[in-house]
Length: 128
Image (cartoon, rainbow, N blue to C red; front, side, top):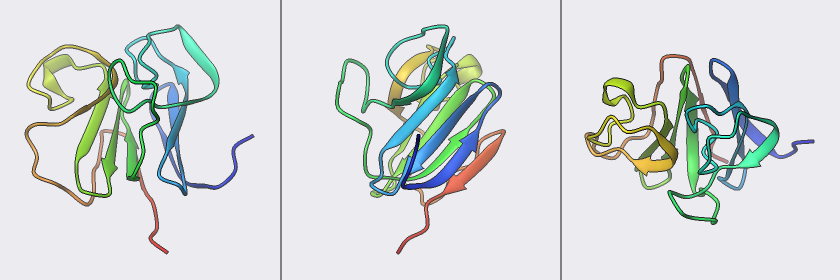
């Protein structure tokens, strides 16, 4: 059971939840790595921690907003850095490649931002 969540984002077949601490959990389809746990397991039926980056076991943290596309996910950190992971067709993750990412990577084409929007729903954490 999830508690302390301040935002939810729903993708095509996966979902994200933002905890008040700034950490992100994800569940659902993971064929392109859109769960962000550095794997492409068939699915994650239970919420799992999104990791900080490829090869990391540390949780992605300091997140203030999340978004979920059909097969990719995005998050924005408190310092404005945008992270993206999942299906990277046509370079949609903004990292300068078309390589699918199974864990969050920094977007290279954006200056630091306060808001993000994906092709699906976007959720932003409220500041207290």
